Amino acid sequence: MKFSTPIPVAALAKELDARLIGNERLQATGINEIHQVENGDITFVDHPKYFKKSLQSDASVILINAEVECPAGKALLVCDNPFEAYNRIVLQQRPIQHLTAAVSDTADIHPTAVVEPNAIIGPHVQIGPHCRVHAQAVIHEYSQLGAGVEVQSGAIVGSDAFYFKKTEAGYQPWRSGGRAIVEDGVRISAGCTINKGVSGDTIIGEGSMLDCQVHIGHDVVVGKRCLFAAQVGIGGNTVVEDEVVMYGQVGIAQNLRIGAKAVILAKSGVSKSLEGGKVYFGYPAKEARTAYRELAALRHLPEFYTGFYDK
Image (cartoon, rainbow, N blue to C red; front, side, top):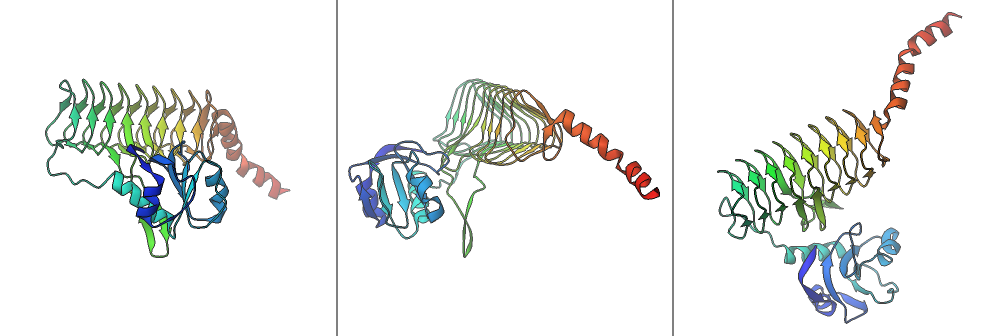
């Protein structure tokens, strides 16, 4: 998530009651979880196991709960609860805005777009030319629809990320500060759910088609001209490259990459990244020809064991 205006790190330290170590003249231009950080971003770390990864990341400002050596050019903000500080900054930049009308007065809707009655359009949504948002669809805050996008009834674009911090008191939700971006010519069928990013963007690439009841997790990036059949589910932070086809009830774990033009057959479960240009099946998913040979061999096991015990 990028800030509308840069924030001086010295001002942040004062506001958060944090000790500033390192470059006191830095200005933070955004905030992101460690998977998404860029130069100028704030991130946080609260466990020694991940200190090195965070300190060596592209983040310029690190919220941390220990006094450690600060890498050159960066700034550390030392505080008791880095997660709370992180969440506080996101809430300041993306305060929760409750709707008081079906279509927010801050939404930017192109004159050629059609928004049917009883559709819900949240704050700061952008809807491009020739879009059609069906009745009972919901487009949440800061989401963006390109040109010629269709969102059918019951679909939800930009719902909160399913992302929590585990504490002794239970699971504490993050404020979802990211966006859901739907590029030109995408069709989102009835009952789909597309989560916004935790602090980055969830993206559905140009010309992709989603059947009914597809779920896209937070920070997922879907390439161009992909085709997902009903009940496909994709875990957070996964990248799906261009022209991937997923048949019904395919499940994809988080933090994976699916190569371009891969085809994943129905009911497959994907737990590892897959190369592009191949056909996959099964759980865990593997090349379909291999999976089918294994299934054929399994069918002969009763005959094998019958012969073995008869000896």
